[in-house]
Image (cartoon, rainbow, N blue to C red; front, top):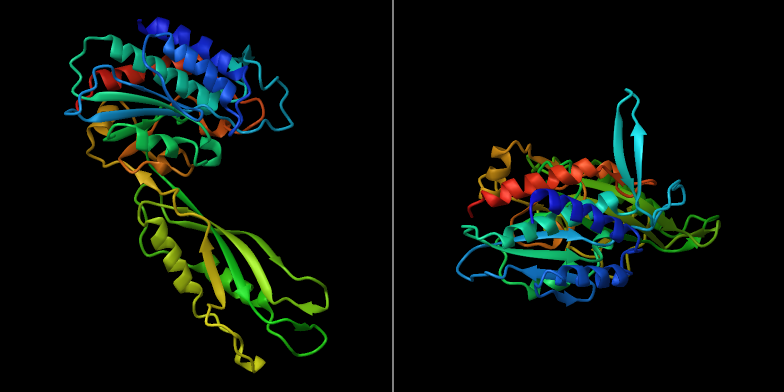
Length: 382
């Protein structure tokens, strides 16, 4: 296979993928099709759930291993699509400056079909060659990436050989995202005491929560990531009260934390807990909490979606930069959050098109991606 054939096969496969609905947790049909396609090369296709992977037929446990990963699931289509989201339609578009460009519209074309087909066919190209690579290749097609599901990449990783570095395909304009924010969602709860709103009684949990929210809003972390900036903490929901004349005894709120490589997720949670720990019932109430639990609790739903990064001197990153790549930090999540080894993400398309009506990819972006991936990996020494 040459680069042009890889491009033509990639576009054809992308069109097939778009035509098969593959919303997160409903990827069986597209996984079945891809298992057949990948197996038609004569390679052994491994599968768990709707995740597929291929292992370098010349795998040598004495060599380092590079993981190539892209996901096969999509979000649900929004209601404002003008094109059929499940039909890969090619159109020539006239841009405001009068120039023209060809686009392929379809759900998942940009996120993450273009990266998937490009990386897959570069994997095929590389393993066909009698190359002097000093590293192994493993390719993983992962499910449930859009929902951070436990039956996605997290289910696959324990089944793979040892991985030393990962290249995750996501729409980045083919620039290397060398760090990525993690995510912790925290459920907050303020504990008060109910009473009649007409009398001076009870402890209003809503007021306690407001105090906590204000503390979280103004809290600043001491350390800041050089690539991702500060940890971002946002309260995104509040719920309290049962009736207009009842002092609420509990108030719950939700905190969205976008973490960076300056802190682990556990450290972020602990620092936020310390920040709200001074909150107590008002002394004027003449009442004391009936338990030893904090007046305001912060309980993370999970700390598994960690921030990720790759060292500046890593050979993979150095190779990409030598070929013109411009590193940046990414605020969006990917399967990198579940990988406990150095990773970067890079792929065709733009993140701004993801999850939007009339999502599209330009065929020329796929062609350029295949060429760049191939150039990077063919000359890489790990």
